[in-house]
Image (cartoon, rainbow, N blue to C red; front, side):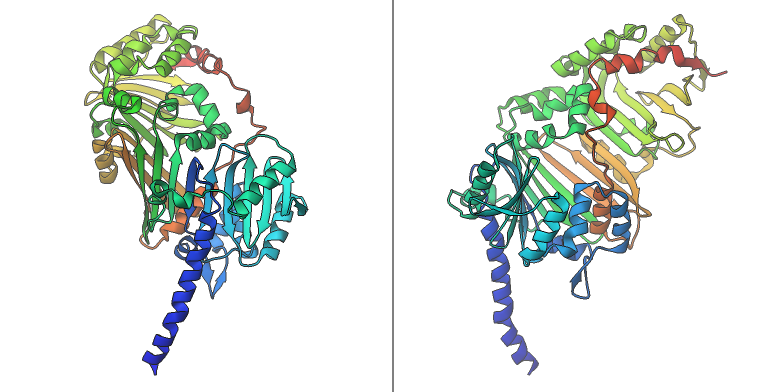
Length: 511
């Protein structure tokens, strides 16, 4: 009898699986063939692996709920908060895509109960659904919310347009009256795997995402080197995020022609990786980022020349031969930072570089400071100064020139003592290591590029029992959103001078 029941269940299961597949295919056919980027999100996989399903019902886990309540301005937190009440189809993928037309960024979500979605969207947007050109929609600021045939479309316009034009763009997608991305085999092969999140992004889509970020725009004002990857002739980038019980893995690929300017630059610029730079980095740093470079080529980049010009304009400290210091780098150039546990908004930091003449540079900096009346204390080979609430130590270890700016006496060990991190930085010309703690669980993210096109990352926790998917969501939910009212938005290139101009006056030898 049991075998008979099992046989009878097969057609039901097959029908269910086919229905789920059909819903995802329906959404794919809404994505225009000329979309500049597509991201597929395996909603059922994420919900199941993050333990959102309990007693057959969708609910937010209690420890994630705490973080959401503390970060209710985050768009991701709002989405997760609304999930149990939104009538989302729990068996279908969701899709985000980008275009250069009316709707620049679009999210498509399959619904099981459109009525519930109506209520949530009206509450979140503060508007009311109206029928415009045959489409039920709300148009608030630069966002269009539309529901049709059990699909929720949330689109952000590229520029302000009348509601009729935005609704017409949505209607064209709902009606499938244009060629779709499903017909583009080159793109679909990157979305066909079993990863929880998969993406194919042309460089235009990457730029669209980054340039709408106030945080990124602020960073590029002070770190124009970031534009090496964005302002290049890279064709596209792909990504696959896989979820496992104890970790999440990330695979990225840059698609570029063999003779592209990007590959030509990277082959000239990058030097051999070397994990010895980690001997100068405390193992408690929240963020550690490293890029191995040939300094002589590095200083020729327009972005670096711009920084050097700004630096030379700073009173007093601009006299330091920063170009000569950077030219001496032959290997990792590493920056590490951690939030100051004692002062809000302050950071502890370390800069370290593999140099061809570290001792010479160290002495030249000491001589420069002494000439300005800031003679250092020299202890155990380190030059020591007091700056504000922090102690600055400059020294050399194993050919690595370092500057530490800490507000405490270091007692912890070094990142070089962490086997996984040492291995990563020892084989990756570009590498980063992040440590975080959300909901009481220590978590880490490692990412490295062993060559110029392929990168691999890993998110994991230091707990043997923690759910890696849930912990990853906690970290993402805790990321603070930039505010349009932040003072940062008023910054300009002169900020470098404002920040550094008085620094030499506050730099004091330790008594």
